[in-house]
Image (cartoon, rainbow, N blue to C red; front, side):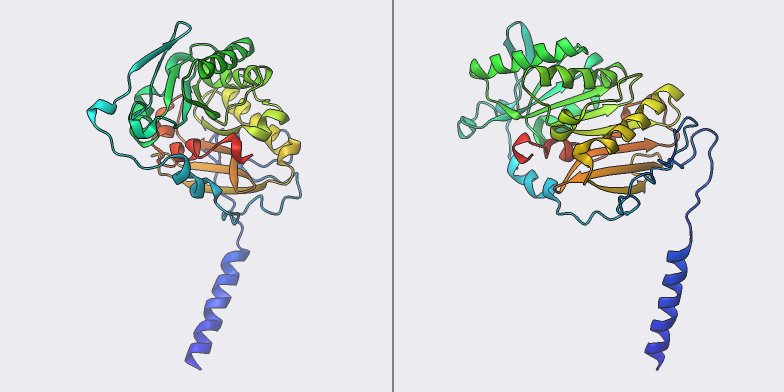
Length: 315
């Protein structure tokens, strides 16, 4: 009888908790209330999508198979290095770039490596080089361009480098961009598309413009978009417009949408994720109290495993 009574009490408590509404609290212009049921011009931060009939829009648990984790070990095998395996400067068609760790090891002689493109102004290099160099060996190029024609030129350069014998995995071209590099990430992706190529994944932090990547590119290219709510209203609105565009693309019509919150970067953060076929194809993170700053985003230890888990071969 005591056990049945305890179970009854626990059941009643759980029912009460589940029936409670989470109203949140306002924080000037950057409150956590980003509802998608009207045009959003007041920088509210409710990431729930109420305009669609997606039953997963406010589900904090992603029940899809986590292909990102299962494929990460295959794409990024663990490896030990010596000083002799350190990256060196390479050059092709007057462009200098870095080799991956262990590129010249005999055991890796047939291995293809991803190419990480550091967007306009080389943001984040001080944040990611140490992680990329050994945890995720890759070619790294500093690409100081941000136009659509520049993206097409990049595609041509990559194809030429592969033909010249550089072992670049064209299924794993990645891009990072902050501020102007954030805005430029979408034109670069469109230019790559014009050149017959795709980025497998993009890390975008802020950006003054460019919210429409396009359905065809969004179908192939994963994006993790970061925005600080203390950034300018324009940049916050561009970020939120991007979220709405991604929600409305045909390729995401059947995507599972989840929402979660954490403070692992030192800022309260709300993240919306659109998952297709087990892959987190669009991730959108808003940071309370963060301004125009890429630093906190790169402290997330899940960021680079997410980036390097993506390959066009899985699409």
